[in-house]
Amino acid sequence: MDKASIYITRKIPKTLLSNYEEHFTFRMWEKEDESVPRDVLLEEAKTVDGLLTVLSDQVDEALLSQAVNLKVVANLAVGYNNIDLSAAKKHNVLVTNTPDVLSETTADLGFALLMATARRIIEANEFIKNGEWKDWAPYLLAGADIHHKTIGIVGMGRIGEAIAKRATGFNMNIRYHNRSRKEDAEKNLGAVYSSFDDLLKESDFIVSVVPLTKETENMFNKDAFQKMKSSAIFINISRGDVVEESALFEALKENKIRGAGLDVFREEPIHSDNPLIGLKNVVCLPHIGSASDDTRTAMIRLCLDNIKGVIGGMGAKTPVG
Ligand code: 8YV
Image 1: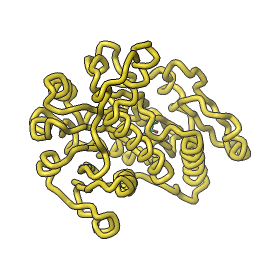
Image 2: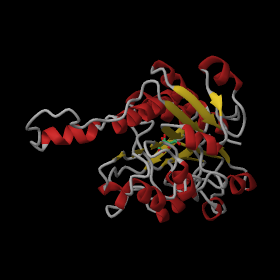
Image 3: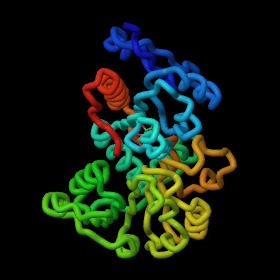
């Protein structure tokens, strides 16, 4: 019997494929400094049984309607806002994601970003490397305290809870806003449910961990930033599209909020003329929430297991929907 064919849209270590080569033939986009062009992806999708995709690959009706053999799209992310789920369903293509394996790593990064922004770690590092450290002054690079402050987590899913867990170690007061109440987090972590508005008004740190949906798109808009304390720090490790970047820029520039730590942007890779980059009170990262060696390997393995499960008829470990 012919082996099923899989197209992988980014370069991943070939050693991770060896366990699966008995069942599959793999083709891969190998250029690391360039995304797979849309026409190449469309062409590959026409013939393959499975795709391993990343967030910047649009899996839409145009692709799915021509992908006559396609059975599974394994997205290398917990989010899947790049995939048209109803079109996938219509074309009998199963979509999978990578939940759980990345929650702790992403929460680590969220907390690192919060701490780096609050304590001005990046500025301090540049200060030394630029040879600017000439003397000691009482308020030199003074930042905001983290311990005993209030953290407001917007989106209390697996990653949100992992952030809340870390916040307990800093004796923080934990507020959260979510579509549904999380009784375990309330009981075990002391997290207090808040309306979105109350959370914005009361939190010293507002951390966005929401998935991108029609409801969450632009939820951090001018009105939201106006409700925040002038000492608030906004952290986004979810999706750029939940933020109105021009409103965030204004809020930061006018010191209506104290700072922001951003791992995600509306346009990725970020445009060099995005004004957020130029602000001193912003720490920017290139969407590296889940980027640890171990977690990326676990995510890739989960994608491959999902592909194997679907094509082998055993079903996926982590189907979406
Ligand atoms: C992705 C992410 O891993 O999982 C998600 O939804 O945003 C990241 O962890 C990364 O963008 C690669 O697709």
